Image (cartoon, rainbow over the protein chains, first blue to last red):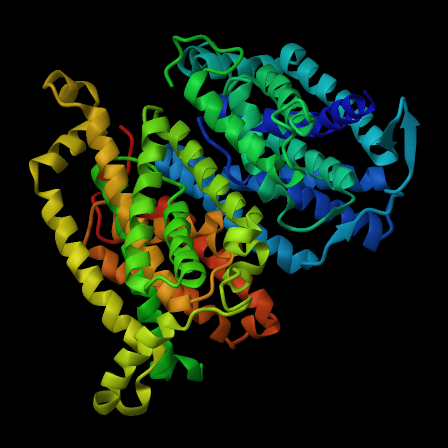
Length: 297
Length: 326
């Protein structure tokens, strides 16, 4: 029983981080038809920049997170201006978008390594403090992440459903032509999508760094496929779906370690559970849990 | 800068170019002919490389028989990938193919008793105990370099022997691939790239054609793995990261997606890029330490990919309309 609580709790924590990262990827896909292969490295960047500001420069932790999110937005904005806008104008195909996103990831990674070094990092926060809850051990950092990540998820969901630009995004994703003629400023929608995904990338990176305790510069990259799994599970292009898909995937990855699931998956195969989920969803329900069959896959 | 005038440097560049040229040729057949975006190509190279290592070290097989089995297994992995996920549309298949390659790598990483795990093939147990990496690749390469010695003198080396093994194969495969492109088989596939419905209405089984393409491309990925194992002798899971697939894609888009002959120049360029970053001593690069210069290679490869897609999506030798969506 305590195992069940422990893994459910872990799953919620991991899942809420997946949800935040996945919603950025899903929004980008819905608006730009772009699979953002660089999303993982934006997490790494957020975590390392926050480390640099809060530990090396000893600035306030929350202030550091905000600056990192702004940096993620700034880089996304810059890339939209120099890259993505031109590619759209050139009518670049799927392969070109794929390869450019990968190219950005390949360029970002050495820059992070060059600026912040290759050593393993750790935030200036007590990672050993734990609470006892019905026999489960709950780390202080996990609890913090769960609270702040849940709050962020609520804000994101409200933003997409209520804010003007959020509505514009959904309208544009649904029918770009119709949205453009009904007076939606397309460039503004695209830019807003990049800014949101940049900010969420950094935020998810800080959360992931906190939960792991220690992190290195391959952190985000190694999570990328798990995010894709969450996106596909929650129906690709559906922002609310990505939130739910992230939570479900996190829960599934953790609960798969319990013995009732084929004797329990060894913890070093956890990423494989995500990859396998990705492949299985693509095989049997490629439209995701919220999609309908008619969607062209 | 001295390094660039040394023949040894260029011999290494050419050896590497030959291996990755064959690797990229597999992608070229898949994408250039069949329109398949395979981003998990590195998995085929990993499977054949590791099969060879395990069979040779653990079971004392001869290198060439092990190589044969390695390539067959790479083809089977390609068939498995295709049978399960090739019905998906382009971007979904691309993601699924990465997942396939990553599952392969995690399996290698976590099956210590078979593959040596994180320690690499050095840790594969064999009847003679641990650490006994086979000297078979060395024997093969030394045999050739002994024969080269009377001709080129002290320049005879492992890398040069490698060139004599890999480049004849590269030329042979490029010749086969260019013949393949002129067959009616390739014409059907080119039609499926534009539109599935037309060839389907002519009674062609589009899925089977694309599956064949994927398997043929995987065979080339597997063969590249054979030469990789021969060249580097030691394998570790981090040699088969996702990025290796994009080495191949860089060569492919540099050459132009359907330009078989451009591959030769593009792979030599890649070999140069790969081999040269540790020798670039001039300012401002001299400020970087040597591990930092290793990241420079990754950065440059990303940069070349982005620049090509932005400025010349058809590659150096390709046709523009093949890369642009109407």
